[in-house]
Image 1 (spheres, helix red, strand yellow):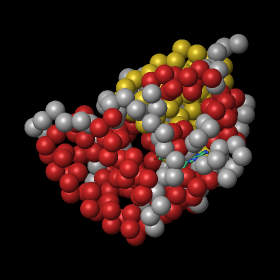
Image 2: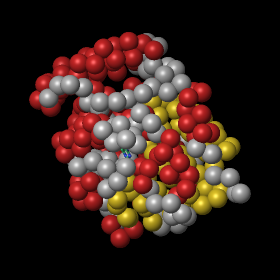
Image 3: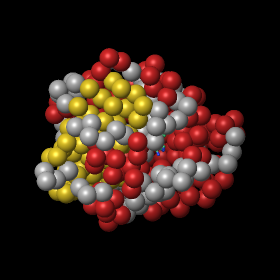
Length: 269
Ligand SMILES: C[S@@+](CC[C@H](N)C(=O)[O-])C[C@H]1O[C@@H](n2cnc3c(N)ncnc32)[C@H](O)[C@@H]1O
């Protein structure tokens, strides 16, 4: 275990996951999804000509979304063995610096206009050093944007997920992949029913899950069951995460009723 994060196991789990799901096709890697993630705080075109950092890049879907938005340069941080896949997937390699380090090692004083961390901090037991690194890497007045799993809106889902995860996170890949197939068809049926009934997570299933290709839907299920550590944040915990890192003007959005997006600003002085 790393003394800073204690999330070596999670990094290993993700490395193995990305070697099995190495591409970013369809809606999963689209600018349409990026607009949805950024809304209501930012629009992709606001990244045009900007210097951007991304913490926890996986196999590069967010890096490529940032590039397609017109960013001038991206620093992409990914600590897992998926790093080589990340490098291969990048659309404009000359505009990207890839670093195989944990988020707390994002270079300080990089004078960045934005740092993004999408779906990463909730996998780190002590995320404070990562938030502080984002703070140091930004120029004064610049912004840190994060997406986190939410506790509110997920009560029903967590009743099923948490016992399942307690077992699933220990399974070898072939058993986990079999479990994903077992869950896949009932979830498709659930998505159909969401069209008819006000079911839990209806907004998520219709706005996101349904738009993914079959392979990416199975990746999403796998991704929920695989990582050793995942925390579901309350609104207050999410805000405190950025406050404790020194950010001001923090705004928070309950995205599709099940997760949080937040944006905070580094003070001018
Ligand atoms: C759910 S994935 C998100 C990937 C990408 N941001 C996306 O949305 O496609 C989480 C990623 O965070 C990475 N990660 C885990 N711990 C990390 C840490 N301490 N610092 C930086 N990245 C980390 C994992 O290796 C994994 O690739």
